[in-house]
Amino acid sequence: MIEIRNLTKKYGQFTALDNISFDVKKGEIMGFLGPNGAGKSTTMNILTGYMPCTSGTVKVGGFEIMENPKEVKQQIGYLPEIPPLYVDMTVEEYLKFIFELKSVPLAQRKRQMDDILYLVKIGDMKKRLIKNLSKGYRQRVGFAQALVGNPPVLVLDEPTVGLDPSQIVEIRKLISSLRHDHTIILSTHILSEVNAVCSSVVMINRGKIAASGSVSDFTASEGSVNKFIVSVVGNKSAIQKTISEVSGVRSVTFMRVDKDAALFNVESAKNVDIRRPMFNELARASLPIIELRPVGRSMEEIFIDIVNNDKAAPADDNK
Image 1 (cartoon, rainbow, N blue to C red):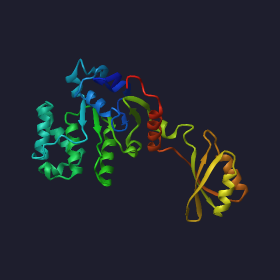
Image 2 (image 1 turned 120 degrees about the horizontal axis):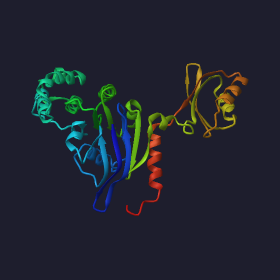
Image 3 (image 1 turned 90 degrees about the horizontal axis):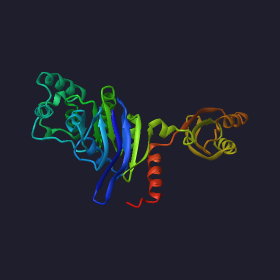
Image 4 (image 1 turned 180 degrees about the vertical axis):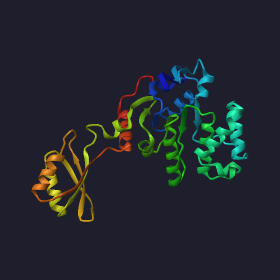
């Protein structure tokens, strides 16, 4: 649905984007991650037609942005970090204005308006002035304007920033529900959000793609899952000693007692499967296992590692 090839953006001698390429498949929710100044906003501004690139190509739904800018813009609904709202309008007036801007056929407007108000759950707010709405409801109005015209692609920039926990949960549910009819790029600094709603990830740093792949590839790939939560019934010291003597175990950390079982965080050497020998040793010691489960690395750990490794790499001459 989205094809970005060799995209470069320069401001004088500064290279904001350096020959990046990635795809977003139809129906996918892609998490677009990177530290401040990495090039995320520049990429989204080029993708949505707000800014030209220096070189490279961007295609959306088969249309190239430089050759067919109008057609590309018709394919995209954009929610910036600060929604583009006219706060002295009512919700209904504002959305009617957006329908006009997007040249949605008159015959489709009422049905689309009703569908959008229902989808983002602001139907009971349509007569309210936007300036009198809470931040959470304003964010929903921003979502509504992005959905006007039923664009196949949605670009969402920090859609949950500044919201309270209950509002964040609601917005995440909304994003997940949209995957059936839309391809979505989600830029966020809340890395748990990626695990919650995204199917793939592109990480950008210093204007280059640092890593990309499916969320499961990042968080549960072989060699990265080397931590386990183990729940065992018995004496805490005996359990810890038994596990620590298993070949391949690197560390055993007591967490807490849960009912009659002690929970431990066990870390093994990479690519060493300690589950069977640990089970056997505990069984010989008459220490029954209640639970044994691997713990993948968090997206936060992966992100920090990638960014730090990238910082440690020698800078290019043109930087």
